[in-house]
Length: 114
Image (cartoon, rainbow, N blue to C red):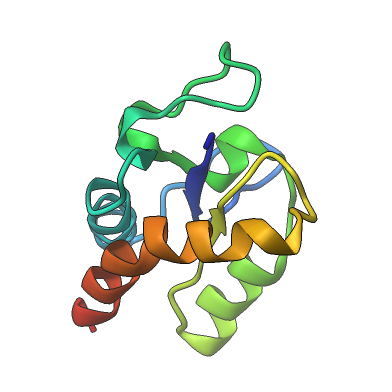
């Protein structure tokens, strides 16, 4: 169950760009991670890549300039995160109930932050 939670702003050509709301993004990401059964452990898919406390800044993990997270944050004033639940992009249907059980409490706590 390797997973990570990634938060905006993803970055610029110079690297990670801390947003004015970086502390809020980190709080939201940690709220989800620490209310998940194992995400907070921070183990990546290959067991070499780790995500401290189960979170990472989007640009530190996947370098992309001007993605939807950046656009929504800058122009729509929306806080957006990306949640990776599995190393498998399209997990079998019989695993969906397991994913729900593993993420239910974390999702509820995340929603409560609004």
